Amino acid sequence: MRENQTMVTEFLLLGFPLSPQIQMLLFGLSSLLYIFTLLGNGAILGLIWLDSRLHTPMYFFLSHLALVDIAYACNTVPQMLVNLLLPAKPISFAGCMTQMFLFLSFAHTECLHLVVMSCDRYVAICHPLRYSVIMTWRVCVTLTVTSWVCGSLLALVHVSFILRLPFCGPHEINYFFCEILSVLRLACADTWLNQMVIFSASVFILVGPLCLVLISYWCILAAILRIQSGEGRRKGFSTCSSHLWVVGLFFGSAIVMYMAPKSPHPEEQRKVLFLFYSFFNPMLNPPIYSLRNAEVKGALRRALCKESHS
Image 1 (cartoon, rainbow, N blue to C red):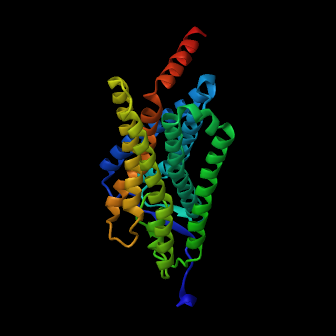
Image 2: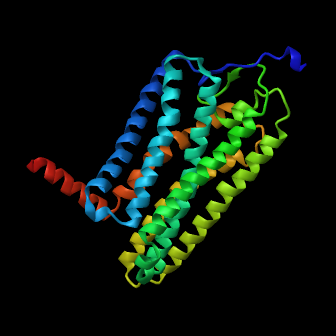
Image 3: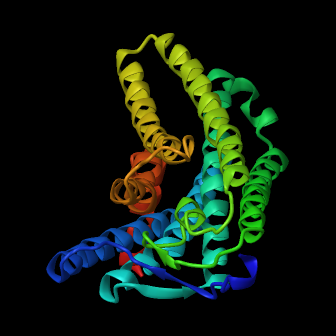
């Protein structure tokens, strides 16, 4: 059988099987959300870079979260926009593997970075007097670099296992980018080992970090309840609830997609679920994590006033 196999050199991304009118409408809406994502996260990066008052560990982590979101969106959304204009757009095998590696790297890094940010907030709220001693710049840089390196290494493991599989056709990916489960369905060999690796990695990169985030915010909520001021408790609950909403959206959709790789999830439902990954989560992070913050609002006002004076 292997002698009759024809190796695949490119894949065909089917995208969304919609009417031309619906595709153009989706193209316009997706382009608008993509622009908002880039502008929002770019504004956060610019404010943190320009305003020295934001050169603190908290905003250092926020700047890297914005950077991950920009890279995450730029890796998948342009391909989807092209597919909406040119249905069934081919992508080379090497390009597909590269896109898969970058997507997994950024997704893993964001998971780990959310844990780092929750731990930073835990130390700041529950141990405020020791915050400057614990969260030194050396610790911040080490945690951030560790998130990036671990995310990239885990993505490299997934891609290396994919490269071991033969792909002899069909070469049509029923998705709008090279998503790992959709590519696995095209393999001409048993993918049991790959599915076990995906499940094990999901436990490590999704369930574990989610538990750490929930524990951190549980301790933060316990500390907020000890605040005497009603206004302080209200602000604390508002902030924690919004953060947990984003965390739940990000981790929840990922767990549904990857914790049960053998589950018969319809492809169209998985595409809609992935939109939370590629659009809503990167777009919602700036207003929830940063633009609601009084210090960021003050930096934005100072930047606008400086621009108007100049």
